[in-house]
Image (cartoon, rainbow, N blue to C red; front, top):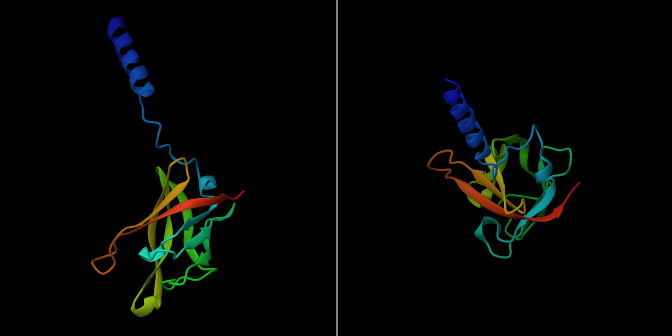
Length: 147
């Protein structure tokens, strides 16, 4: 019986030592890794059409600070993400989206945000709402870190 107990303890130690640590859950409500300025040079798939936003320390929103000549209904000062929260291996919140003729209508929908490449790349994944509003994924690069 003692031998069986030692084998079980050794197996538990081995399994805990081998657990995956690369996708560490953001601690508590820690949004610290998001506190930066983020940008994409081809917003809406249009080259040289930058969209830049900032997530400032102590906030749960991301505010647009620059938008290119094809804004698709987005404007400087718009909150592109709201209600940001740490969740699993990334973040969740609500993200602005636009639709209709000339992107004249807008709304908010769920967005999942993950960070890659040592927190220098942010992926915003808007899951599909239905066949009229398919999944949308944007990738942004960190421009500056905000404290």
